[in-house]
Length: 361
View 1 (cartoon, rainbow, N blue to C red):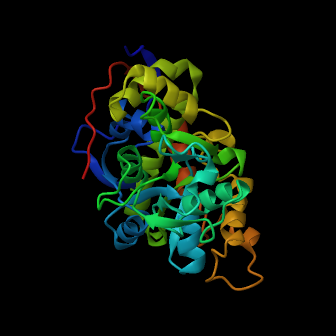
View 2: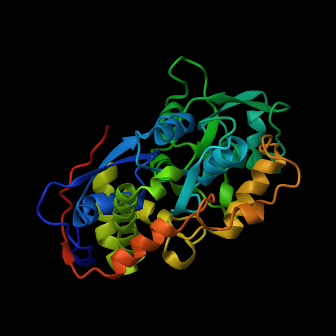
């Protein structure tokens, strides 16, 4: 099922034990799937432990406490923690632009107007996806509190399961939520009568956006050992992302995604189309994890339009605050080191049947 291809890997760090990286994420992205299944992490001497986070609050708590070395989460969360809460979190780069983000409902709800008076489940009422959800529904004529209300459930995995079952774990009725990769495609692949309805695509209302971002504690950048480890992790992900976005590698990427997600090759091919979409896929300006300036300003505008910067003083200069640099929200020093590491690589590997096992905590 998996076509053979040449993979540009990175310098193997000897035959000794691999160094461990604790990686927090809401979902196994396509870039992670390629890196994990095709040996990109091993090529830089890393044993990456994937920790699926339950919600954004827990994710940032684990990052700031040192439980995670690095986290991928919506950049809006970093904006919130940095600007509203004065927490020292740093964005190393952008992974995606909101892959397959949709407002989805149970099969019996076919129009947004049917959500009036009903709860909509979210990770957190003040998370980035909740604000994008509010924006989309506002454009469809519905306003929070006036027409619907939020029910906090947790990350996308939990919300998707609840959407399919029609109830939360405590028995509350579920009607709609916001979904993204890989659940949008998986939901649409279900039989009629079981597949969620797509009421709207976020990209039809806000585009571009900056969605998932590589986020670390600011203190990690001043620690030589941590910085080196992070650069190797980012180099692995950079190599995997380049591989993913190269159409010549499509069959192998699809195979890696199918193996990682536990889905058929047919569904994985549809997932591949979504993550390579130039508007909303796992892409960034220049293809090197650069943050899309227009996208992150759109994130700020959406949050601000709903009063989401209550901890920020009037007149705050967001444009200046988004300038990359040491001590700022965005710092490309680790990203640049990762790209340099990749550029200096000489090892090539063979892309065959993925054999690397997924690792969870």
